[in-house]
Length: 250
Image 1: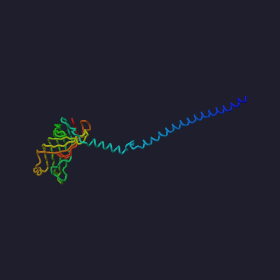
Image 2: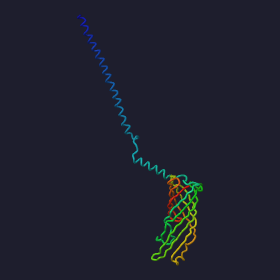
Image 3: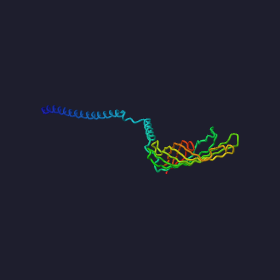
Image 4: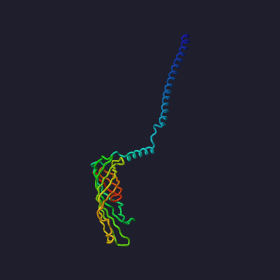
């Protein structure tokens, strides 16, 4: 019995040592596993600030976007087309009023009074064989009236002009906007002038009455609000220096 007790003590001590070693091994493994995951999580955020600070990922500012849009609009609007927006076979009718008519040298100080002139022009596209534009032919019918009151008298003089003229027009669009039609041309025809004067002496000496040759030159442009209807303006001279009005294409 004494011998059994002496052998049991070393066996219990050996079992305790083996159990303690196994526990320490498991504790070491459990402490290594979180450390590796923490390293992985610590590396991930380190790369994100680098990408955010990269210049390539920065978006354009509002000013830069605005400048780009303006450049795009200008390039689109003012790049000339290779052809006209008025083609052979197209027909156009202008109805307008004329301003700033000539006074035939009667009164250089501008006291000659005049009502707005009225005009109707028609044209049709003939050919596009002459360069990049389109040549059209047509005519003008115009009417204007003006009068003069003699200072400190009851005498009055009045003129009426009726114009019938042929027009040759060359259309070439100076912009890339298909709603715009720009053109230039020449007119030639006749002007019928009638004159009246309450002073019989001056009436007998006035020589501008009757039928006369009339010529003109002009620059113009149309803007079509719809496909067929728009507005026009012309500067130059055939019956007045400026015409404004409505236009139709058909």
